Length: 461
Image 1 (cartoon, rainbow, N blue to C red):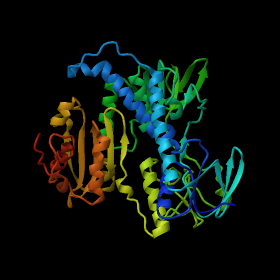
Image 2 (cartoon, rainbow, N blue to C red):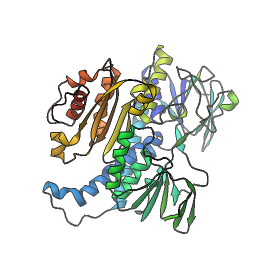
Image 3 (tube, one colour):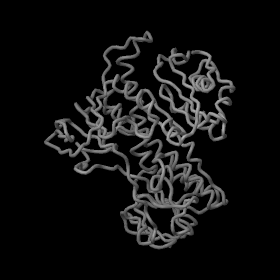
Image 4 (cartoon, rainbow, N blue to C red):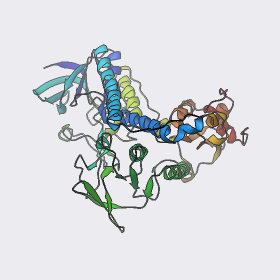
């Protein structure tokens, strides 16, 4: 029976990062994953392919509608969907091959198959060629999550599907219904709208982007509507059924919607089935997530869990940070994740990025705060780019001036948020950002101006 120091079940952002960091620290590491390609949902059918399609579809839209304003005349622009999807697949392969290379570089043993923990320190790998028994001192569960659905809706993998299917539609749907106005639904809905679909977004709540700062969500709704997406808020979907090559979506209190395809984007649920953890006495919370302590330990001290299978936002970068913290804690005795500085990003157009507390959370907690807001419209670089839609909002403690939250909607928000994350990680004040030299002309100056605005000192408005 092969013996390792550590077995990591799952090779997504949490799993493969844990395996690599453990190998760097001198452990003999085994990685168990059932998929042919390494990288997990994020790399194979999530973050990476969706961003590839978002980029390609934005280029297509720009060539058709936006380049003329820059003095670039383009005629006869056509969509080659097959080639666009092939590029997406090539981007994915480059990333999965990269993970495989890192495994080889770091001497990580890879076992393909479904991992089941049969006893403390024992994992059985159910592979296509039979079972393999492994032994280790420590086990990390990093099996990620899968698409959640709703009562009355059964995914058929074709006309009614989740994000995986929406990454590879063989043709542009005439009418796409998206159920759920969160990150995934808005991103993939935007892709197919740009490529020519009519897109209708159905959301149970009275707003989009639940959990995000309400002011930004309200502005984002206006932006998406301007780009042609149709929204029906406060809509409870009761069923969706395939009728030939079409789908009928039933909405409580409203007429049924006939469409060509349905994207179910109502969230994700942890992948814990088949791990054997219940028999070992490892408990789950009411949401089906594995209960761990501050050191990521389960009820069995030698078994850990990270990423989407435990509490917290289901984000790749959160899983990566937990992976490093878990392994370093195991080996060195110290590891830490600052959950107050985990950013969230929606890669639509405009992009939306957020870190820290929202205004609603501060009000609810009774925390006195000051606010600085600066619009893209007043920034020279944004004007030169022709992307003047959006704003940056900085929230700071009214007494200490310490930054409590930063919320951005606008061009390259996903990149701009990194400065805010770094500042908050080091406990910076709004004054610290305001007095930091920012190159001109750059979009980063919008953050500086918003920080100045906390004290009413913005220069360019």
